[in-house]
Amino acid sequence: MNILKSYKLATILFLGCSVAANAQPGSMTDKSSAIASEAVNNEWQPSRRPDGAYDKVAHISKAMPWQGLREDDVMWKKRVWREIDVRQKQNMPFIYPGDENTGGGSFIEILIDAVKKGKVMAYSPMDERFTTSFTKDQIMDVLVGKPDTIYIENIETGEREMKISRTEFDPNSITKFRIKEDVIFDRNLGRKVTRIIGLAPLLDKKSSSGEFIGNAPFFWLYYPDIRDVLAQYEVFNPENDVARMTWDDYFEGRFFSSYIYKISNPFDQRFKDFGMGEMDVLNEGQRVSEELMNKEHDMWVY
Picture 1 (tube, rainbow, N blue to C red):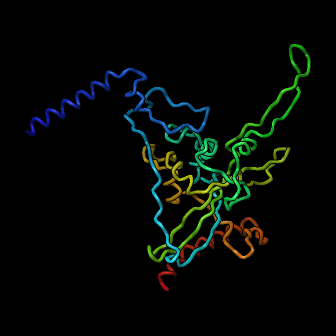
Picture 2 (cartoon, rainbow, N blue to C red):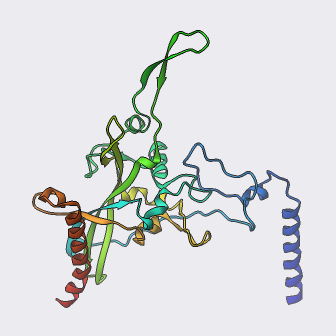
Picture 3 (cartoon, rainbow, N blue to C red):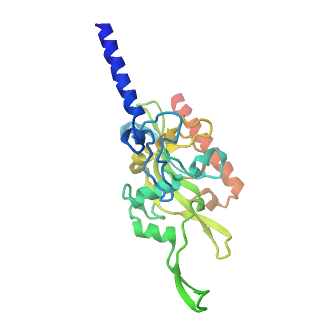
């Protein structure tokens, strides 16, 4: 009986190898080894041939649901606002231009593509409470700008002709991301829990002369709504092209570098609104971060 089973298994494997060997270019078998995430950049095109030395399978992931938190189990909570600077070395995955597993675009392009295709709802740049939606048309006005009419001279006729132009969106103009989160001590779990509530890309603002004058939120996203989208795209790992994780895993695992610029307070003000300089803001953020880390120990002591 064991010999018969071994023979059947060998036959199936042989037939499978024969089908793969005889597959014509463009066939389903050929395409299966070049599975790509849904493209988020119109300029990026997946390879028509298996671009690699081994067979690949579709990387389809789904966000793991959060464990429920009961209000009666919450002993302590603090709302925290952080900023992620993509120019820091640890945050370089945010500006990676993309490949077949990252959707062919950077992180900001993944978010914009999800909003444009109606996968998630965006909210007004100044509305971190998620009450006012930010429409696709409003986003496009920011991305490509308002139509600008200019007159150029026709080389052949010498006449001045009207031309309508738009400013193309530059992903590099997003240098920071802002997140709003709740830090909670759950006595049922017996540990501190951090849950991201909202995420906003910050758009660099420049003067007419091109001088940087500051940044402001592009739009706000309700983070629980975008987790399944983030789970479909992988984060580039500079150390190993195989050992990658999804963007949802990246945020849930807290692999990014950030600094605290605001915590809940009676005046709803940021650290710099209290007259602190840039270095003082960073130092205060570090102090608050250490205080939050020690809070879990303090809850166990008491």
